[in-house]
Length: 215
Ligand SMILES: C[S@@+](CC[C@H](N)C(=O)[O-])C[C@H]1O[C@@H](n2cnc3c(N)ncnc32)[C@H](O)[C@@H]1O
Image 1 (cartoon, rainbow, N blue to C red):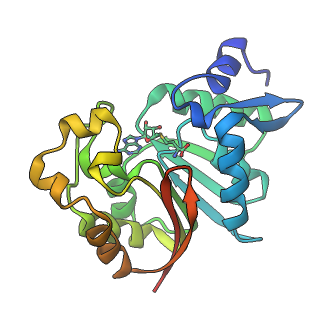
Image 2 (image 1 turned 135 degrees about the vertical axis):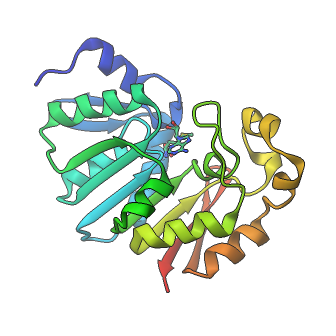
């Protein structure tokens, strides 16, 4: 199935720009910051994994890569435009093992779905504080990591701002002071450590990067 110029442009140049990629000759070509991020993240991926979940999958690059490696790969996001563009890329590339759904983490956890490898990259602050795209917020690290533990069978790759000062302006503006006060590395890591053994890696851009393995 051919990919329209409009979708190609959207995948190559739209928010978030650190997730811009080209589809060329049946291949995915990450651009700019995604190229650098992917080099780092790819090294953390196990050689083999049967299933993959990307929470906040955006334009779908990581999900398509996981499907290309043979995994049953699911991307969830709340943005219809991103999901539609990622679906079009999947159809064009014939990557039938990739799926994209408009779903939240709590819905997935309630379904009891489990995945060998889970990605939560640059999205945790939206789950905690809510966003313009999805105002519902958990404002509770324990609840979020309980859900993450429910959906993770093997490893969780996590990278995110861990203080309110480092979050994007739209998050800082909407955050309630009492929720912002609890948004710090100590409380986040304490909740994560109840379910995951944390292995620290060098920062991904300005954000901490770690892999959590299920206890
Ligand atoms: C900054 S982008 C990060 C995209 C991707 N994870 C990456 O690292 O390139 C944040 C993504 O999270 C999505 N998002 C925001 N709130 C969400 C929610 N409650 N559930 C799932 N996705 C959400 C946005 O639509 C957006 O695609």
